[in-house]
Length: 235
Image (cartoon, helix red, strand yellow):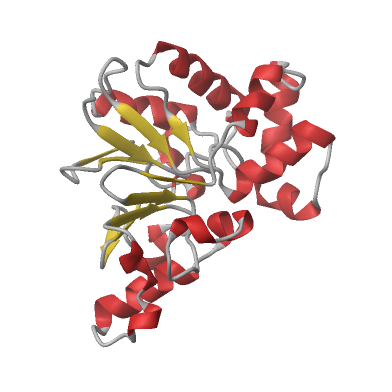
C-alpha cells in the first residue's frame, strides 16, 4: 500500500473533491482513501458525489473506507425508509433530496448500499483512529454507541483543553487510547483556521467545505495536506 489519505465533510461538493484528489496526485493503484463522513448535504451535488465515490471504489486496488457522519445517517434513513426530519432539511437535507430527484439516483440500490456499508469508525494497524466526530469511552473507539461516533464534540474539546493545560486528570485524557485520532464534524473555521488543526494527538480535518471553505486531504504519515479552492468560489 502507498499512502493513507484522509478527507472529511465533503458536503456534496464534487468539484472540490476532484480538485483535492488531483492536487494530491491520488493513485488508485497504491493509495488508500479514508473519508471521515458527511459526504452529503449543504452542497448541490450530493447524489453526484456519492456516485463518483461508487465509481472510484471500483477503480481502486484498496477500496476506500467511508466512515458514517451525522449527515450520512440522515440520508441513509431517508433512502432506506423515507424518514425525513425537519432538523435534516434545515441543515442541508433539502439540497440532497433535490440532487437525488434531479439525477434519478433515488431508487439506486448502489447508493443505498453505499450508506449501508459505512463504518462507525476505523482503527488501523498503528492504532490510529478514524471517526467522524469523537468518542467518550476512556478505552477508545471500540466502546461507544454509534450515535456518539458521529455527534460527539467532547473529545475535541478535551484536546483543546489539554493543549492549553497539560495537567488534565488522567481519566479525562481519553484521546490517549489511540496513537493518533482523525476527526471532522467541527469546522476549523470556528477558530478562524482554514487549515487542519492539531491539538494533542487529534487532527481536525474539517476545514469548512460545508460552509464555503476549503476541502482538505491529508497524508496520515507525513501530515502533508492538499486543499481545494474555497467552495464559495467553485459554485
